[in-house]
Length: 434
Length: 164
Image 1: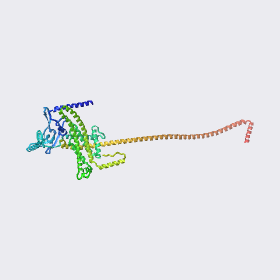
Image 2: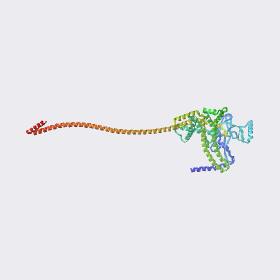
Image 3: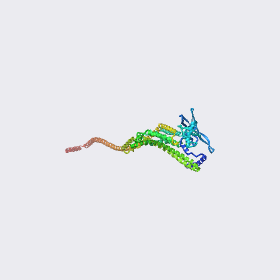
Image 4: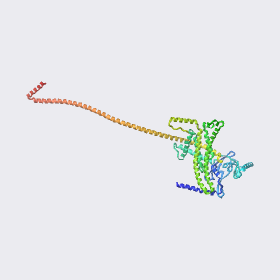
């Protein structure tokens, strides 16, 4: 135990030396663009970085619909070429340089590029060279309006993309590429499928046996959600909604956890992406409302309030309908903000090291230890948050569904039944209230 | 802000991925798992109930057994008592019977003894009288060998007759 403590301490001390090395090699380079680093880590991308390299990427298919409605597919590795360049200090460096992708389909030719200086930064756009006179004139006009306010060589001109010092007319194609996030999504889906089908297969093979080890943990989660949350809230409607709710929980949970893994199979900030949480929220919205009871809809369109609140001005109706949408919207934003926040804090804590590196090696050394400890703590906290957020999303969806499907008349009768039972049974157990 | 504008491609794939995942799991995953969990929970509940029942039954069986044992013991004691009583009764009866039988035999023996005694007496009397007659004859013959004695005797006899 003591030796372990000692080695951890030694490791931390060794990190004190790192910034001085980093500083020595980074000399002469322009200041770190912190904002870009953060957004690069949080955002999506074509291709998936190979662990510990910023140059090499795992190629993924880019699927776009060109301007003429034809679908074009090519490998994301073609968006960049690997070049060896000589830096300011005379050292050779391997760098990924963006390039134009030329796809020939039949007798037509399509040119794509990963936009950088454009409205659609970091997206694949189709480009057309500005060749004809009328095109040139149009571009001059567009440039003039921008140049007035933001003069410069790298000005972003609406409808045009600058590449390699030259402007091209751009078209943002419909993009359903398998990006890093999409690929991570597919990995998460496969993981969830394997976990759940594995557990199902275990049950099919061993009747009346509790799974152990890994499967035991999956079962623990299923049982925790199913018996304690879903069944308790939904009662006899459990069978109808349990598959959706459990799928939802496991999908979110696996995506959250995979997002915390730094290298390849993980690392994509999936649940911290608003598109993912938006879809989850839309599906939740559908599930909440599609099985809404008569009582639920009556409460929305003709609630039990004084008449002047709902007629002739439908104030209450407006509020009710608004709340119909805010519920899933809150689900969407909560998950998105929590997960993105967690990622952002960890990245920022790491970036503090590089910010402090500017003040000399000693300052940086101290920051390294503190930053690493803090980010380690944040990552541990994020594991907890991963579970809690997945659970909260599922729990709230469950509650909303139970609220929308509940029928108060039925419940009332049930309660009366219980009461009479109690009177008959004397010291019987109390009525089960949901 | 790129971060806050949902990307169409990701929305599209997310939707497809979720729907497919849901359909696969809803068909082959969850029903099996949930059924197993429910069944197992039921079985455990039933098992506990069964154990409780079994324990109650065992307790009552134990009480029953104790009761039966006590009853049997009581019965046994009673039977032993009865047997003892019967034994003494039988012995008593046997004794009585034996005594009766013995008495009968004795009586019979007495009667026969009495008879044989009477017979013997009779015989004896006859014998005695015979002997006495003989003796008397002999004596008389002896005594009456002279005439004088004969006369005395006759006299005596006559006297006796006269007296009567």
